[in-house]
Amino acid sequence: MTHADARRPLVLDTRELGRRPGSMLEKQREVEAPDHLGTDVISVPEGQPLLLDLRLEAVMEGVLVSGSVRATATGACVRCLEPVDVPVDVDLQELFVYADRAAHHHEVDDQDDDADVRELDGELADLEPVIRDTVVPELPFQPVCREDCPGLCSECGARLADDPTHHHDQVDPRWKELDALRDQLSDPHEQKRN
Image (tube, rainbow, N blue to C red; front, side):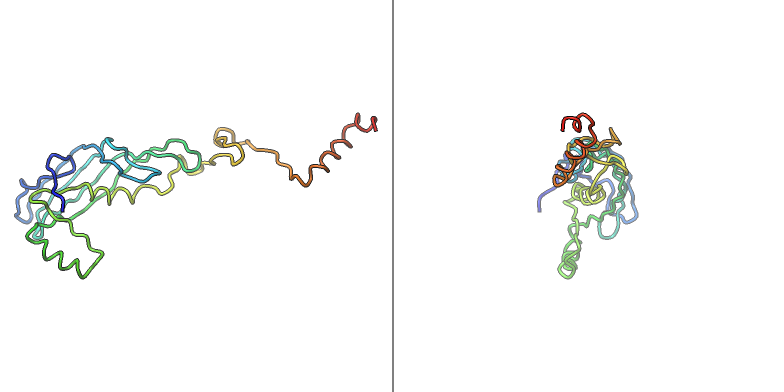
C-alpha cells in the first residue's frame, strides 16, 4: 500500500474530526484536477479547478466522506469535432476504514470480490481514487455540442451546421453515358451539328 501524502490537495487530514462516532466536520475547498480525470474523448483537464463540498463524519468503522464535486470537462463533439464543455456535478460517498478495523473488512472482502475497502492511512484519507471513480463514469460516452448536431459531410468534411443545404450531386457511374446522351438531346446546338 502506498502512503498518502498530506501535502497533496486531494488528501484530507481527519485528525481534527476525532474518533468519536457522530462528530462531523464540513470542508469546502478548490483544488486542481489530477491528470487523466476522464477518457480520451472528454476529461477534466489537469490543473483545472475541482470544487469540493465535503462532509466528514466519524462512524464506528472509520470516517464517512460524502459531498459533491463540481468541475468542467472539455472534449470534442463526436459528430462535428467542435470543442465541448460539459459541467460536472456529482455526489460522492465513501467510507474510509480505520486501520485497526480494516482486518475485519479484508476478511469480508475475501468472501465478496466486488467489495473495495478504502483504508485510512493513519489519519489521512486520499480522495483522488474516489473522485476518479465517481467523476469518470458520469462523463458522456459520446459528447455532442448540441443534441441535433448534424455532424460533418461524409464527402468533403464540411460542417453541416454551417450550411444546412450542403449536398453533393452524385451520379451513379453506370448512368454516366445516359446522362451524356440526355445532355446532347436537350442541347439544341448539339442536335443541329448532327
